[in-house]
Image (cartoon, rainbow, N blue to C red):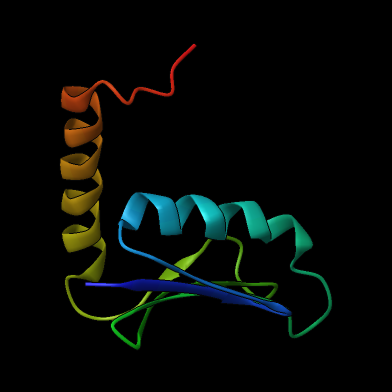
Length: 88
């Protein structure tokens, strides 16, 4: 499974949802203009997007939020088990 984050003049692929989500969130402040948008695609399908028309990011597809939330928890637990904590 691969995630791709794209915005104006930016595109990068990630293997993990956490990494893709962090990158997408970091691009939100640069989302300027009426049609500025930050998107996350999973295997070529849109699953997450932020634009100026919505106050919060949108999840697309039935069950997408729940599935990605579970993946977030799983990846976080794997990071903690391997000692890759990014806490101070």
